[in-house]
Image (cartoon, helix red, strand yellow):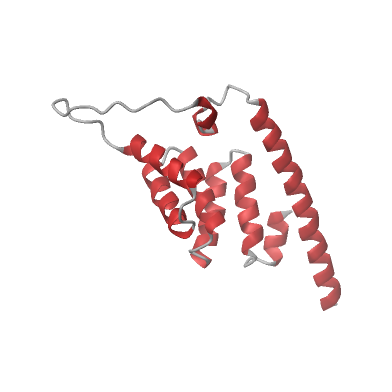
Length: 159
C-alpha cells in the first residue's frame, strides 16, 4: 500500500519513512536502507530516517557507517540516552583491539535487560519481539488504510 501511494505521491516522505521502518520490522534491511536513503536525499535532517538507516546498516553488519548515521541522529536529538548508549556500544564494537603491549581496560558486563535485540541470534524467538512485530504489522495496516483514504479523497477532489 505504501508503494502504491508513493507511486502517486513519490515526494511524500512520511510514507517513505513508514515503508522503510516497515521493511526494518520485516528484516528486509537492504530495502529499508534504499527507502530511507531516498528520504535523506530530500530531507537530510529527518531524524526518523537517520535512525532507521543506522538500524538497517547495523543489522547488515556495516557498523562503521551505522555509527556515522547514529552520530548524525544524535546531533539532531541531543542528549537522547538511547542513542548515546547505542553509539557507545557500537563505538566499542568497531574499535580495533588493543595491541598486545597495551594494557586492557576491563569493562563491566551490560545488564541483559538492556541488550539490543540485534544481538539475539535469528533462530531464537523472542516473544516480546514477536509481539512488537505483530503490533508494527497492525500499525502498518492501519497506516496503509489511512493512506488509501487520503488518496481516495484527493482523487475525488481533483475529479
